[in-house]
Structure formats: structure tokens, C-alpha cells
Picture 1 (cartoon, rainbow, N blue to C red):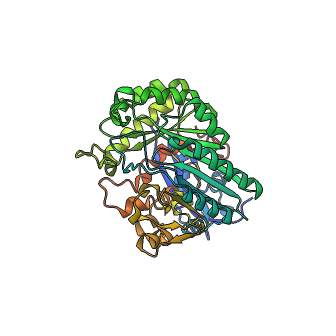
Picture 2 (cartoon, rainbow, N blue to C red):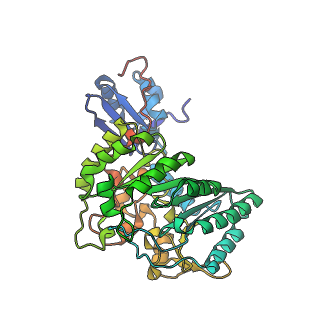
Picture 3 (tube, rainbow, N blue to C red):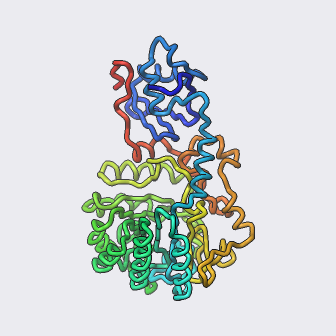
Length: 449
């Protein structure tokens, strides 16, 4: 049943005691999560405390040891987890079977949010840049398995007609090349009316993200129209009308000192659609308040117990929560992959959407023939050569399989309260939300619960 007889403990094992006196065993590499009683835990600890284990020579706890192998708490003695993660990272980074393009149709926005890091210029993507994108995609489609298009801004729904027309061309190109087409959109939700949602659905958009930062009284102080008018009621109506149309509908909730105490009230408002949306709690970061003299953000240590409380409350109410711990990470985000990039209205190419519109920070550009011209500069070289295994802090971190080095853009910049290493905190609690709790650990007949 086992390919090897000699095993060793995984370097990614975590153990914690829960509130009821049971023990939680977690592995960040396999995402295994197991709950055991004290008697079983003592047996598990006895096994995991050994530097090597020969299962065939075991006189007791052999079945338990085999279960630990199946859940990767024990791994073959010659298996190098770090080497595996490094190879996985490089394979994902250089993967050529998929192409991902985020299209920023406009830098303009109908909102004037207090924390937005973008300069919302009245600049729409001209046809010549659209044509360059289409030429680039057409040139690279042969041999691809998947094309993933995301619509970003500014506010992309200000240009619904362009989304509709460009989507039709891209979907047709994929069909002609036997390539799967996927699409997503990040929108403030104000123009996500029933009619527009139906249009997006015909464009094969499966994944939608909208932000709500609290009940109306709070949200409307943060995310308002350029006229100053509030947006909460309109967004909520649109979400309730359209969320069911999409495979994934994420409500992002940015949290800081201004709104942290109001989020439970928001959950109460959202309960009627809890089965149609998933929640993403995120800390507002200080750089996003560049328009203000006050940075009302939390440090990591301040934020974590707040998110813990909100996760508990939302889970008890039956919400799905997006954390991202369910599968082995190959890269922190798609920006690390050489076949994924963002194109803004200038035709500039960025690896990270946080710098769209900032021409000095561009990775490269698309020329009129749809050829990607990479800049020969430090930004380009760092994106193309970075690997988390070059960093001692990452190599020894138990959270490496979860985040694969975290956000490179955050680590590049001198931002207050950077959340680059956020995934290594509260791992077991977040795995309990995201991963299935195993209640079938085989102990050789013992009842471990």
C-alpha cells in the first residue's frame, strides 16, 4: 500500500489545541486537517517526534502511522518538500499552456473612494490598444489550453459595450482554436444592474468581485460617487438581483479602524443572499489612503483578532468565506507567471494591477503588431527572476506552501504595515474555515473522538 517503508515527519506539520480540549493536526503542504482526542494525540506525537519511522518494523500504532502517511504528516524519507515546491513554482511561472490578460478599458471611475490608490484619469483604452491586445492573443492562441480574461479599471462597467464586443471576438477566437475561455470582472457594482449582469453572463464572465465596506451609513462615507452621493443601496440592490447568475460572486470587505465595528451589521443585511455570495475580508492597507493625512489601518497584530471574530461570526451565520487555503499554491498570485499580465489604456503592460497607469513602473508594452516588448530594467528583471526559495525567511517558513513568498509588490515598496507575510498567522483557524476537517483518521480501532 505504501511506496516506501521509511518515513520522516513533514516540515509543514502544525499542532494546536482547540477550545474543547481536542487537538488539531494540520499540514500546510497537504492541507490535511485532523481533530483528535488527547489519547490519540499522545500516540501521534510519539510517532512525529521520531526523526525517521520504519512502518514495517512498528509493533504498535502502525495503522495510525499509515493514516499519517496518507495525510502527508509523514512523508517518504527521500522526499524533499522544498525541492518539490521550488520545482512547482518554476513550472507554474513558466507554464505556457494558459494565457491570462487583465484588460483595463478605462482609468476613469464613477466613484471617489477615500482609500483608492489609483489616479482616475479620464482615459479610455483607444482602439489601437484594443487591436494590439487582440493581435497578441491571436498570435499566442495556437497550442493554448486556456485563455483567462479579466476586466479591471478604473471602473470597467463604464465601458459595457467594449466588454461585450471584445468578449465576442475573444470567445470566437478560442472556439476556433479549441481553447477554453474564462472571464472575470472586478467592479464597484454600481452599474451592475440586472440588464448589465445578463450581458456579462453572455460574455462568459463567471467570477465577479464587488466591494461593500459596511452598512449604508459607513459604506457611503468611504465609497461614494464623484458627486458625493452614497452608493450602498444601489450596489446592494444590484447584488441581490444578479449574484445568482454567476458561478462565483465575491463580496470584498475592506477593514480598518473606520468600519471594523460595523461589519457584523453588514452580515445581518447580507444574510438573505448568503448562499449566493462568498465573503473576502481584507485589511485596508496604508498606501491606499494616500489621499488622506490619516492612515486608519491596523497593524497585522491588531487586525488578526478582528478578522478571527468576523470569520467566526460569518461562519456561524452560514456564509462561505474566501481564504485560499484549499489547494497547494504554486505562486502567490498570477502576477508571478510569465504568461499573465495587465494592459492599461496606454498599452503599457504590468505584472501587477496595483501599478496600472504608472508608466514609470511598467513591465513593458504592446506594440502595434501585438508584440510584447519587455523593458530591460530592474522591475522587469525582478518579476522574471524572483523565487521565494532565495529568501531564507521563506525557506524556513511553515506557511510557504500557502503563500509561496507572498506579495512581491508589497515587499518591494516601503509601506507601513505591509501584509506580505500575513498568511503565516492564524493558519489552523483559517484552514478550519477553508479545508475539510477529517473525522476519519484510522487509529487501528481506537475511538479518537
